[in-house]
Each structure stands twice: as structure tokens, then as C-alpha cells.
Amino acid sequence: MKAVAKAHTNIALIKYWGKRNDELILPMNNSLSLTLDHFYTTTEVQFDERLANDMFIFNGEQASEAESTKISSYLNMVRQYAGVKRNAYVRSINHVPTSAGFASSASGFAALAAASTKALGLEVDKKTLSMLARQGSGSACRSVYGGFVEWEKGNSDDGSDSYAKPILPEAEWDLRVLSVLLESKAKPISSRKGMKRTVETSAFYSGWLKAVDQELAEMKKAIHTKDFERLGEVTEANALKMHATMLGSQPPFTYWQSGTVSVMEEVQQLREAGIQAYFTIDAGPNVKILCLPEDEQIVRDELEKLPAVKGIYGCRPGPGIEYQDY
Ligand code: 2P0
Image 1 (spheres, helix red, strand yellow):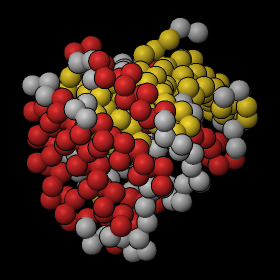
Image 2 (image 1 turned 180 degrees about the vertical axis):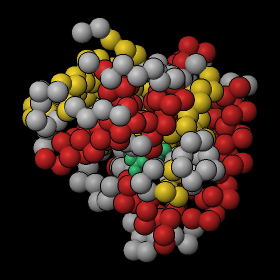
Image 3 (image 1 turned 45 degrees about the vertical axis):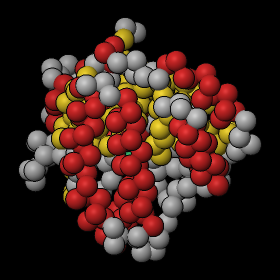
Image 4 (image 1 turned 30 degrees about the vertical axis):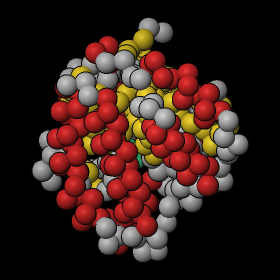
């Protein structure tokens, strides 16, 4: 009744932005990501009939009420799926600088889905695991696999066709993603709230949906032909479109801060100097930069000169779910 699983975060190159069903977490569009080696979550789950409640220890400390409630309601879904009632002891260690605004829900829910189902002795295939992870946090469904991964939105009402599929394993293409940590103020709005407001009110949301299928097709072609320039161009264009939808929302909002823009400008200057570097930005101020291994050092050196840059974490393509001994 005990299991340990490790899952890595992923960075979306074609973003997931908007739900058609909030409860089942069904997206409006397909998305495509790269799993990263540097950031991960390790989670141990033990079901025990003697426990009166679920217990959640996060980074060695008792989790907050809000975090515990979130984990318990997720475990309720897994318990219902498995037809069991017993409570669980969950211990999770996050190797993601969450306070710095790097997302951890993807690795967190992927690890929890894997450890909880294994602890219950369920034989779940990766497709089922991806669907279960999705119900914790949408982007978590992509962290089941390593390398390049596509989340197919599906068309059903029950979510049975909304899960991730591997596109290219991590060992097949050596790219670098530099996660740039900025001196930043508190995040104004969660991604969950941000995407909801965008879907409901943005004048530009229809434009986002109209463009995304074509961008996805170009992205997959770039991956299969290992065309880095094309991959970078599409990644950047897709991220900018996602952020544009927020400016068209009511009330309008943005995750960008002055440091965000300074990094974007630096990436443009690097390209003008002949270095292939491209940025992407999620629902926060930090910027991720894609580059080739041979350019990693120069990109780092230039970024470190910017006053807003507080840290740079170098990532490579990373693996999917791994189970561990305990
Ligand atoms: C993504 N993001 O594709 C997009 C791009 C942020 C910007 O997935 O509500 O934490 O739990 O499904 O997965 C962040 O949203 O949202 C996210 P929920 P999630 O990576």
C-alpha cells in the first residue's frame, strides 16, 4: 500500500490556455511540451486504514490547510476510481523553486497520480495515468512522458479522449532551456483564474483558437525534422499570442513585468548577433529561453548582465514518470 514516484516539470511550446470543462480539466486546444530534467517532484504515498484523515507533508513540513484540501480532493478522485476508502499519508519533495514562480503543479500532480495508483496496486497504463494526472492539473498530463509530448484535447464530454502522447523521446534531440528567474513582484492572478477570464471575456480568444492548430502542425514538423529555427519561431509566436489574449480580457491583465520585457529584448539582440535563441513565457513573469547546446554559455553570459536577472537554471530534455524503491 506504499509507492514512490518521481515526475519532472514540462515547458509548453504550444500552450494550453483555456478550459471547456473546469471540473474534468478539459482544454479548448491541443498543447505540446518538452519535459525538463532539472525540476522535479518526488512523492511517496502510503494508504493506511488506521489513518483518520489524509496527511500531507510538503518539503518536510506539514502542508497548509489549502494545500491539504487540494491533495485530499485529488485523492478522493483516485479512491473513487479504485473503489477504496482508506486515507493516505503523502510525503512530497519538490525540487522546483516554487516561491520563485516556477510552476510545480505539473510535476506535483503527475507524481501524485503515479504514486497513489501504484500504492493502491492498480495496473494503469500511461494513457490512463495521463488522464488521472490531468484531473489534478492540466499540464500534469504531459509530464507522464519524457521529451516532446502532445496533449490531445479530445472531443468527448467525459474526458476519456483527453490525454498526452509522446512525440519524440528525450534522448533524441539535445536542446537547452534556460529558466530565467527574475526579480519579481507577487503574481497578480493564478493561471487557473487567468485562463478562465480569458475564455469568458477576451476579444482575442477566438484568434488564439484559430491559429493554434496550424502552429501545432508546424511545431510537430519542426520536431520531426529537427529544425531548431522553426521550432523556436513557432514557440515564440505561440507564447506571444497567448499573452495577447490576456490584454484583450475584461478586466485586462498581464503577467509581464519590466524584467520580462528586458529578457525578451536581450533574446532579440542575441538573434540579431546570429545566435539562435528563442523565448517562451508561462503564466508568470519569468522567461524560458530555448537554445542549442553550443550557444548555452554565451546566452547565459549575456543574460547575467541584465540587472533584473536573479538566477538562471539550465535544463535539458528530461524523462517521464519514474517509480522508485523506498
Ligand atoms: C501550459 N500553463 O501549457 C500553460 C501555459 C500556463 C501557461 O498549464 O488549471 O497549472 O491546473 O489545469 O496546468 C498552467 O496551468 O492549470 C499551464 P490547471 P495549470 O503549460
